[in-house]
Image (cartoon, rainbow, N blue to C red; front, top):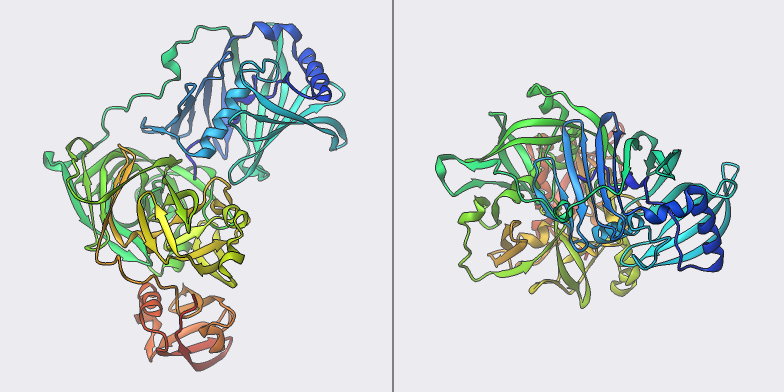
Length: 615
């Protein structure tokens, strides 16, 4: 789930106004729209301040924005239920601020393009191209719900295209349509009122096509040509520390379990626990509904949560007094309440929630995959003296993103301890470079299961993955087939998971935006894809077959989706942890034979599963 709750909501004032350097048809349409919205009165608008009510997903709050209409700079602040935050652009730097007050420079291409579009609209680039250039084209007359519209496509310099829909009868701006990284968002404008001679939409609705998550802003105050200071647009300074390490120590070390290539640590919440939590470098704070109830916390709202799967889930919010990892404590944290209980069937172990970004943002975190330890160090006390390879990164929202290449083809790669895979190539990047044909990838399988359900991919093997100056040989590579969710972004080449990361001990230095890779004992080991040819989930005291790879060992043994595995080599699966079975399917050599007791409907039978390499 993204922290930016109101990004794109406060476009009502100036976000859909016309342009000048455009084809003749566009100039005429835009001139008519300008006249309908106030004409020459807009020429005297230099700054804007607006404030209004924000409503979405069962939560209400306030939103406020300041805009420099001569340069496009802006800052937006919001408070929504138990959370709050801000976003801004100072003319060069795009930044965000989360509920704890922690600021973050947004360096990813998606964020930069989003900010360029918003700055263009704030600068009234439609009418004043000298402020912010753009390409404008006419898409012609279109009809929607019986109404005719003149539609223009505008691509601001440094931004991405968005469509401007103008009511052909009234010449009023009706809505915009913009394709973001993983969704298309439509923003509707209504309740136009006159302020200082210009017409402003006081009601704004933004939707991604799922009405239960629509976002509404009802403006309560609009004022023009207010005095704005340069400092208002700059990224805020960090707040006073909301974290500490007990006993005045500068670091703390905690053990972790590596299960299904996922990191699990024990944490205490509100001085209760410990609770087993998944640790994901880019993950938000999450607790399950059951744990929230156990802690006496009442969830607010039903925001949209997404992951690699194609479905989304409702996410509530709670305020947590304390989060403790080892001797490190974070205070007053916002947690999402998300139904991860079903994910426990995927993992084969009980799960209470997730931590990651908020912890890693405050400390320098070393993940020692060789010895299964995480060390958190206060940034002021950190000084690296090893011989590891330093790789700088930008933030892609919460996720560290590095420049890299796959077999010589450059791209941007997210570093994700929350992924069990080695390398997932996102659909747009894989299609652009036709990797399926390049690698001869024909093996289709379920390769992951998370928020939104199963993720399917074509599985192959690349030659060399480069991350900064770090190189990894022959990683198992999955070409995503997802049509929705996190893996459809055109801005990211790939997602690097634990299959690659565990070859190193990695220091995540978020305060200085750098990663430090140190090779460990796993570095030279071959990367192995599952040798059973099937995906299993926990189902009570059995394992259920959720996917079978055509021509793979499971298919050869006669297994089908829906079959239940009751025993392996005579041992009831109720005595076998699913993570250990998955590891067995990867670690035992090709040709190894396992005797499975299977239940298909009412029938039971024994089959031999002969493992083999599939890629």
